[in-house]
Image 1 (cartoon, one colour):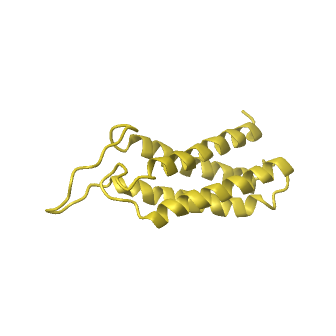
Image 2 (spheres, rainbow, N blue to C red):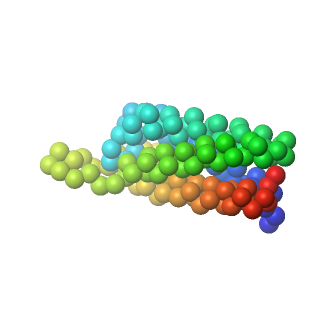
Amino acid sequence: MTPETTTWLLTGLAALVVLLTRLRLRRQDAAGQVTVPKVIAWTHTVAGLAALALWVTMLVTEDDVYGWPALVCWWVTVVAGLLILLRWLPAKGRHASDPTADAWGEGPGLSILAHVGMLVGVAVLTAFLVLDKVP
């Protein structure tokens, strides 16, 4: 698979993660042990959409001036996503409750796949841009 094909594939997957995370966390009673602060969820969404817009602009115009700010936004999205993933850590204490479930699946498997995958994907996109493999 060429770097260009891989880049477009990873871009699509990253967009999917950002949008599905927004959908999953839109309710106050989202799955997990603890509620995700709204600022983290919105940071994930806004930075992800900004990254996507800048990154696609870079790919279409073939001008890497858009790629560097896009990478900053991608990394902010990754950090926010990993913070969102922390909601699955076990809560301790006398008043701790069991994890909340939702229709998206049992436990944190989907969240781990999405956010660790996002970390790996953004690392690959960073390497491609640094090594001048895209645009």
